[in-house]
Structures are given as structure tokens and as C-alpha cells.
Image 1 (cartoon, rainbow, N blue to C red):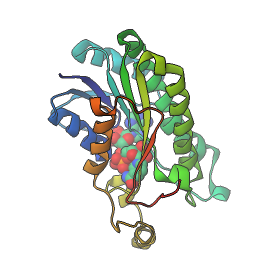
Image 2 (cartoon, helix red, strand yellow):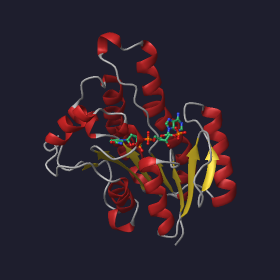
Image 3 (cartoon, rainbow, N blue to C red):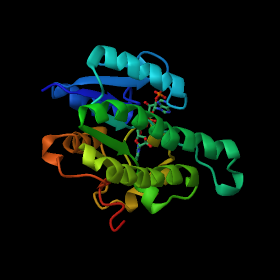
Image 4 (spheres, rainbow, N blue to C red):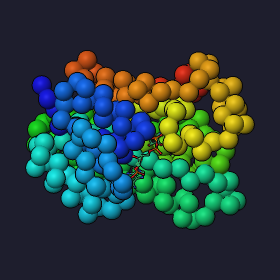
Length: 234
Ligand code: NDP
């Protein structure tokens, strides 16, 4: 059956791989984008998740075309790396506003339809860094760790309504986000990855699709690492 799926930040990187995985399986997939030409093959809605009005407008467009969102993948995220002593108030709050509060905005709006339907799947894209920590990424790590408490609270709050909330915690994935790293930083990271390589975005997408499938009907409040072993033990 074709389900209504929304992937935030589905225009590139991990989000695009997730959007493609659902579309390939026959689902109706909406993606958000902020600027430029969005990729073809999806219902692309312009939406900056830091703006509640744009979030509301995006949902209205999606609901008109695809019906209420049944599967939400909150993937949009940013980094603004800086050592603590040099990290400005804006460096901190803008990352929280996108990664955490932006996720709150899209999840809250999706739940309206999910409550009515008495079912729903929500997958949040966190990061191994949220549990492991990372120098120069206190803002990002805090935002990603917070997603775990957020998802687990909602798993408890809304489990009786047949809505599941799970977190995927990728390790280092080959996308624009990690292209910004220096060769030295890359080598340092890979030294800690038992599988000795970066993930491909499709490897994250496969886990997300599983969590939205019937096979994952009894999984909620879980944090699933897809990190080549980097975060083992956390
Ligand atoms: P990219 O930088 O390649 O893409 C980020 C995506 O988020 C883009 O689609 C971007 O949209 C969107 N986005 C950013 N800010 C906003 C906003 N305010 N409103 C709407 N959309 C926004 O990142 P990745 O694909 O690598 O990362 C995707 C997710 O996975 C992120 O949450 C990231 O933190 C997480 N992650 C990534 C890892 C990695 O190694 N790459 C590892 C662990 C987690 P636009 O094109 O408009 O900028």
C-alpha cells in the first residue's frame, strides 16, 4: 500500500537517499527544500523548519496532494562547529533551533494527522556524536542527544495511540556535511571506525525504511546506531 511519507531535508544527502528508498518501494514521498531546484520524482515543498508558518504551509500542501503524513522522517539538520570559547550565542541557538526545535515543529504538526488515523511512524535522525561527544561540536552534540529524550518521551506519551518514535544515530556518512572535514580529521575519524570506512547514505536509508515497515511494529523509543561500530557501548 502506498503511504504518505515526509522527509525533511530530502533534497540532498542522507535525506535524499531516504526519500528515494521510500519512493522506490511505491510510497508517496514529499520532501522539503529551502532553495534551488529540488530533485525530481517527489512532491517538493519549500520549507525552512525554523519558521513555524512555513512548516504549517508545507503540511497543508502535502495533505492536499498526498493526504495526512503517515511516516515522518525528521532528517534536516545543520552543523556550526566551533570550540566552546569561540562559540557565539548564535552558533549555539541556531543549531538548536534547526536540529531540535525544528524537529519539534515538524513532529508536532505530523501528530495531528497521526492521532486522527490512530497510527503513525516517526523516525528522527540523530548522530553518533550525540552520545559520544565531539570536540568543537558541543552545540550539535547537544541538539542530537536531545532528540533521544524527545523521542523517548513521545514514545511513552503516544504509544497507546499506535504511533512509534525511533531514533537513528548514523556515524560518518559521505555527504556535503562531512566533505567540509579536512583529510587529517577524516583519517582521525576512520581510525575509530571498526568497519574502516564512511557509510553511504543508502545504508542509513535502509534502517529508516525498516523502522517504518510492518516488520518494526513493536519497536519504539529505540536508538539504532548505523555507525560502522564507532559508537559501540553507548
Ligand atoms: P547535508 O548537509 O548534506 O544536508 C542537510 C539537509 O538538511 C539539507 O537537505 C538541508 O536543506 C536541510 N536543512 C538544513 N537546515 C534546514 C532548515 N532550517 N530547514 C529545512 N531544511 C534544512 O547533511 P546530511 O545529509 O549529511 O545530514 C542529514 C542529517 O543526518 C542531519 O540531521 C545530520 O545532522 C545527520 N547526520 C549526518 C551525518 C553525516 O556524517 N553526514 C552523521 C550523523 C548524522 P538545504 O538543501 O535547503 O540546505
